[in-house]
Length: 287
Image (spheres, rainbow, N blue to C red):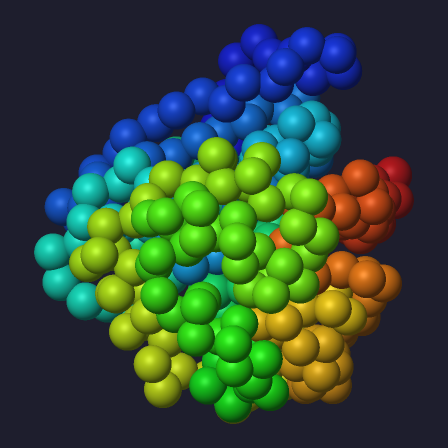
């Protein structure tokens, strides 16, 4: 099943505005954005970083107009109400599977960034028949990761970077490893998470690691890492590439933790080409 696409601006220079949905999944309301494409390629499901709202998926939605791009705010993040109880990654993955059912999507490609990359790994092994291709960006195998710079990791763990825009701007380069000239434009796109939402995201991954199940991931996987990432060093991408059977690694030279935004003109074509390989293979198979 695929969601029916409404008329959109695919193939034009007009702004590509997402459709907003607010489904309730097992008692939890979620804010969801769908950038509707022309329906010619498999939809892309986006898992965001910790504390990050769905607006950060806009460059993907704007660029990938040949497919639906689905992004959502985790409970207590962006404009989704706070969760009632703590959750584990397998529970979050189940919630997302129910979300896809609610939106009438069957098989999707998956892109996960940072914290969302960990959840994308969980989702891909837990619901492997629902995942076509997998893209893991600026992420790791969880608690077994090679740690980033202590100054950056300590700032990452505190929600002040979302609550205080001046703090974000002042510490941007040290925190993310990206050029400071994009700090203000990034800060204005961020919505402060609730304390409960942010804390529960931190707790969700406590003690979690994907290392035992990475060899069982059968999806073709693209791993993208920045070599200037202060939070998730490049070595973590090399570990993922080694452990995942059908994985390849793309290194963004000079890229920090937010290369998907700061280097979108460079990185999104790499993602598009990788996802397009699957579309070409499926087309050849049916001819």
